[in-house]
Image 1 (cartoon, rainbow, N blue to C red):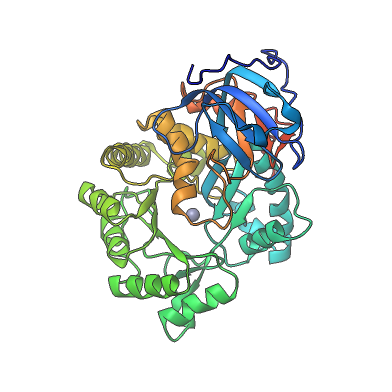
Image 2 (image 1 turned 120 degrees about the horizontal axis):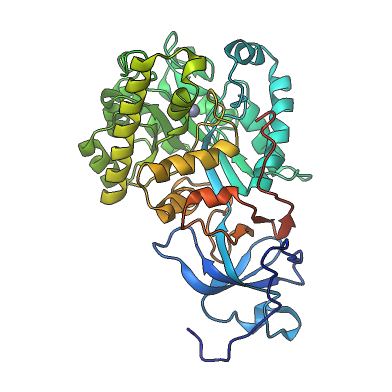
Length: 441
Ligand SMILES: [Zn+2]
C-alpha cells in the first residue's frame, strides 16, 4: 500500500448491479476509490487510486488518501470502494462534422439531407449532443461546415441553460480553393483579398480554430490521391500565420505525401487523415509538434460497405493496402513520439457520431497501437494539444468531473468500452446502458 495509514473500506459495489454513485455538489464532494485509474496522459495506470470531485471539477486524484479538507463531514472512508473498476477520463472526439448524418448509407438520402436549410441541419444535430454525453464523450472538436451548425452548437454549450452536452468547438466554414475539393463544408479563399482577410472573417464569425483543405481526398478506384494539392506552401504559411496572430490553431485536411509536405512546411497544428504520410514526414511532425488525427473509420467503412458502394475486388484490395500502410504509419508515429489524437470523421459516409468514435478506437488498436496509447489518444493527448477553452479529458485536479467507470478493463481491449459502464458527467451519474440507439447519428 502506498500509504502508511490502515486501508479504508467504504461500501463495496455489488459486482453486477448498477453503481449507486451520489451526485456530487459543491458542499458534498464525492470520494471514490478505484482499482485502476487512467489519467489520460501517463504511460501506466495507477493502482488503488482515490478521486474526489464536486459537480464542477476534480479536486484530488492519486494513490494517497485525499487531504481531509476536501472531504465533507470528516468522513474516513470513500463513498464507494470499487476495487474491480477502471476509471478513465471522458473521451474527446477530435474530428466530427455535426452537420452531417454519418450513419446514413444511401447516397440519394445523403444528398437530400444536405438540401435542408441550416436551421433544419441544426435541429437534427442537437439531439446528437445528449447521446454523445451519455456515451461518455466529454468534448468534441467539430471539423467544419459552411452552414454554421458546429458554431451554433458551441454557442449552446456556452449558454446559461446549457443542455446535457459535451463541450463543442468549431472552425465554422473550412477554407479551400474555388472549384476544388471541399465545397460541401468550405468557402473559398477567393472570396477575400488575402489569406489574412479570409482568416479574420472566420474568426469574426466565431471560429475557435481554422480548418484548411490543402488537398483532395483519396481516389478509391485508383487507390491513390490523384489530384495535385490545392494550396501552395506559401498560402499555407500565410493562413497559419494569420490564424496564429489571432490566437487560433489550424487543422489541415491533408492526404497524399505532396500535400502533407506543404501542410508540415506551412506549420499547421494538426494534420487530419494523413493517408500516404511518409516516415520522414512523421519525424518532422514530431519535431514541429504537429499532431496527427489519422481517421481510419471513413476508409474502413468503404470496405465494410463495399458491395453497397459498388466497389469490386480490385478497389477493395486498394482500400486494404491503404489501410495497411496507414496502420504501419500509426505504429511508426507511436514509436517515434508523434502526438496521436483520435478522431473518427463522424458524418462521413457510414461513420455515425459517437458509436463510430468507439469504432475508430478499435481500428487504432487493430492497427497495432496498445490499448493505453489508444485511450490516451482519445483523452489526454487532445486535451493537452488542442487548446480547448475548457479542461476535460484528464483526471487531474481542476479538470471537469467527466469520466467513465467500468468493470471491463479497456486495457485488455478498447472494445470493452462498448460494454455496460457508468458515465459521470459534471459530477452526476448518467444512465448509460452502453448500447446506443444509432438513429439520426
Ligand atoms: Zn472531416
